[in-house]
Amino acid sequence: MSGKYKILMVCLGNICRSPVAEGILRHLATEKELEIEVDSAGTSGYHRGEAPDIRTQKNAKKNGVDLSMLRSRQFTPEDFDNFNCIYVMDQFNYRDVVLLAKNDEQKKKVKLLLNEVFPNENKSVPDPYYGGEKEFEEVFQLVKKACEKIIEHNAVK
Ligand code: 4NP
Image 1 (cartoon, rainbow, N blue to C red):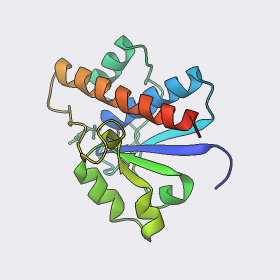
Image 2 (image 1 turned 90 degrees about the vertical axis):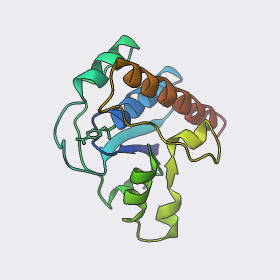
Image 3 (image 1 turned 180 degrees about the vertical axis):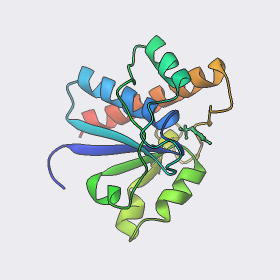
Image 4 (image 1 turned 135 degrees about the vertical axis):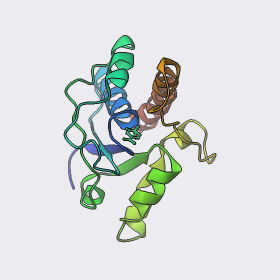
């Protein structure tokens, strides 16, 4: 792996939480002219090829982030080779991704996104899939805080 620092955002379906994380981090990195490459994936292939959930897209758009061009894909073991850091949204994602790791070096790449905001608390970004507008907004604001922290850390690298 060479060149830019590469970050992968992972959730279950890759249609609600991780696309928001991908969109926000890319948006912030562009604003700060930081050389980061961002992608996202789901531990499941349930929504393979689909655009983000329409509620996710609407909420992100309201907050100034366009997610319409993103398409869901499933996480693969090769992602460990292609990314420097893999942020997961919850404990289930953590378990599912770590299960595919070949060694400790790969395992160490996997981090809970909200530990950026609440260090060592192992909090999860709540799954908004069965929620409403309030839950989607909550996800956006939580993920935004975490992405701002990632940018802060990268800025001082
Ligand atoms: P995500 O949300 O993991 O944030 O993309 C979900 C999307 C789809 C499902 C569950 C959560 N699903 O059960 O299809």
